[in-house]
Length: 91
Image 1: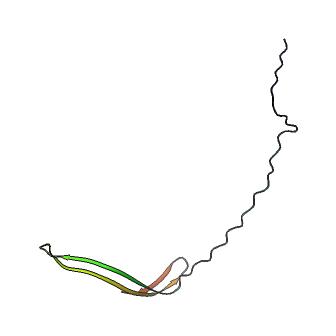
Image 2 (image 1 turned 120 degrees about the vertical axis):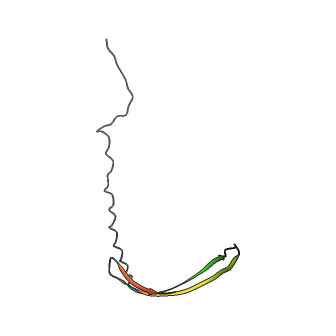
């Protein structure tokens, strides 16, 4: 007995083509960020508000303290590389 099997398919003469493999572009090394130097004088200011109620033993409000606060501060820092030493003054 003789059998014949016919299977449709694609002819690949010489095998499948290899994909074009271009080398991936090499990203340049990131540039080193300049280190920050914290040495120097500084001057600043602040503004705020306080709100306080003082209640006496009888439960009555003795004083109502709503006040705005202002201030200036100044100082000097010296950068030693891995740590910073400084001092300042203010209210």
